[in-house]
Length: 328
Length: 291
Image (spheres, rainbow over the protein chains, first blue to last red):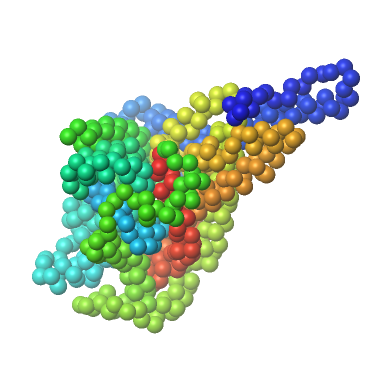
């Protein structure tokens, strides 16, 4: 029945000889309503995307071929000049390495912990919803608040983290000054905010796994770890791919956390020696601080390509990793 | 991918019995408690510092109970930045964006799920593909366009680019496919309903839970948005996040002041979250299963 009604055509505007003209007009209106409404309903999205998604992306590519100042409206065509400059720009390479380093330090532990946390949440708990809400709590924190709070916690002199380290008899760390430790601190912020969220997504996928698979494996003598590796992990594959790809697209654009982590407030440098400046932060600085729009556009386009490539690599990698779990 | 949403909703309440995991042991609770404490700690710390004076940060062993200075520090927040204005701006921006995103996404989701038209499949695939476009990288031309229009500095510059999102359209389409039977739409049409009345009286009531989740999600995302407002708005007409950033960008950072600001800014979202938390959790988990 459903299939039939779905295909039944709109009441056609057939002009029958005996019909009053008013009826015909109405039929025509109905027909038009039937034909045009779908396009009308989807139009807002396509309009908005064209204006704020497609046009800016293409125009960024166009701008990247020019030397253009933020205030000056007379750009000079430089061809691939901006890209050539970029290749020789140490700060750009540094920001790219910083971005990748922060990305690795945040994605790998985050997804590992999220899977573990999901396994914990997947046990028969009392008040399961309460626990889920509690791990999702960080998700409501704004990135700005997060950056401010963690900059305070990781403060070099009076930060709580260093206080705890000292109490434990360890050395204090200058979290902002040192390159690696600044990356680690920023990764902690990213992980703190997203681990619980991703754990819930993984948990949903775990609950979709049929119970009898686990029961059959238990009967065959498989232990909890074995069941996790041979049943749960392979079946989580689509979800893990989804989580990895979305965190790649987001993780490589990290901006707010490093901007607010800077000990010199309001600065876009990402530390005195750019030790934690990310590519997006560098793009922002080039566009709105040093006001070289063409150069900043070239940075944006290179980052766009990097994101696509890394998202693809991650997609293939995750597929293989989860696959090999299933073969054993 | 296999569960129908209304059923998933009904079942989520009893997920305890269905869980494929083992028994929860005492160390399961111990670990979860540690996670929960870690999740809550930065919020608490922020309130703790905000409720004392700056000396808390130089103490060897910081006190673990809040002091009595919160209101005084909050007052200083309102004195240092136009915080009321920022709150008002954020409410206007997030409120408008939420309404339009829910409306346009629900309409588009209905069209993609239940109406037949030329190019439906292709256009929907296009929507899915745009999910991967990092729109943050397009801010330069967008800024130029906004200046050209004379919108830079005004709230419309933050609202218009966020009127509707691909995530919203995708989410509503997935939900509508299963929540609204074709027969219902067809029956209403046969009875002479115009398309928009079908949407209003048949579709909208059926997809309310998904629309509510999309609304909460959109509101939080918009409330927390930073990069684009930073680019396009001025310091004297900020959103809450910009006001916070401004508090921190003095030469000397007074943390009991700044963290009083972050606490104030977090309160509205925290209240919404604690009231509607179970729906947000359910929404995220359903979205995951739909993939």
